[in-house]
Image (cartoon, rainbow, N blue to C red; front, side, top):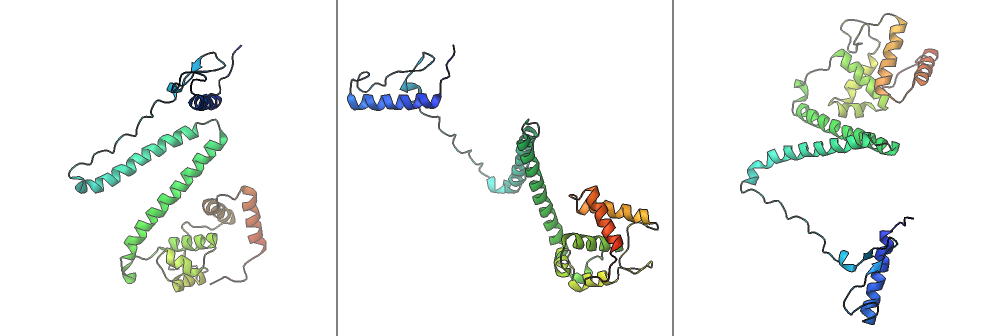
Length: 237
């Protein structure tokens, strides 16, 4: 018959016997000696097994003499090493049989992706912001419509959209007022030609899945039905 040896119980019994020995001198053994504590497995565990000094942490890595000249390369290499570590950890989590671990890995991946995308946008916006407003390239008509779609999906005001895309609120309001223009020189245009209603429905579903991925087929159908039964009476500027 096998017995389970709980290490916490062994430690507790060992500490108790050591204290008793130190207090009563020769009781349980000679003074200054640590008595052996029997375990359920029959093997004696002495304090010497637990009194071994723990290994010390390794010392700091010495810096090269010319390290200030290698700061830029060190920054890039540090992030590359961090990427390798993250990829290894994600691979372990993805292959875990525990669903909670896999969900945590997916959540961490999405949070990291959001941070990387924000940094990409910050770099691009900083470059564009250095160009005077009158010298910046204009958005094509299809991208203007995409900006208005994003504004509607986020529920932003004209000023919020203007700050995000380095525009003015008056420009966004002008685009919104001229949505119904149907001519080759219109400010806002579709990226593809749509002449039939099924094509319009397919385009709306595709854009909803892009901007609102949490919406399922049933909810998309309900949204389209409401839009068809409740035509617009006006638009917010």
